[in-house]
Image (cartoon, rainbow, N blue to C red; front, side):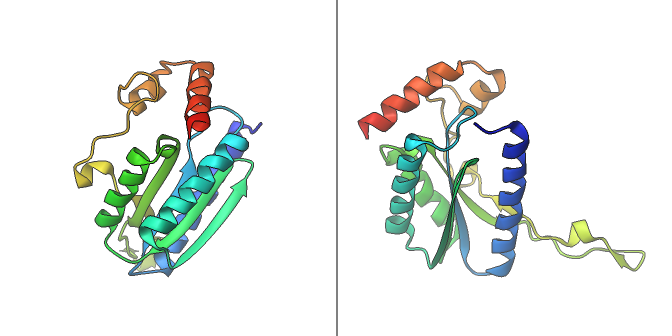
Length: 181
């Protein structure tokens, strides 16, 4: 079981890693895979099965030129560099999320640079504004709707914010998805 502090620290590290990969690899698209597993346990047999399937699907679909996987207690993460256009990559990643038997449990982000550059302020470069950030390409940019709730089919973000469903309900549904795949 992980704590909220561990989860937040892990997200900060992932975000910094994403920004570094985007900055250090111009001309390539960064694709990041994480596993959707609500609750305090982020690494178990279910998450590993989803992670393995996600890595295989990304390799087969996008043909990455570089990849790195992190099997962490705070959740599985994989980074892939792929040639191509970010919008085309996003379309293919949505195809995996929407079409793979375990795709509903995969979060596949396509990242691009925020494009920020140094901004002089009184002859001093402001460090924070000079850093390039990796920002996700949204589904809306390729004409795809947001993801839907695993249980009720409403927009997933709304159900998450409102805590419409119990953790137990979500866990049972995830177990059924993993068992069926």
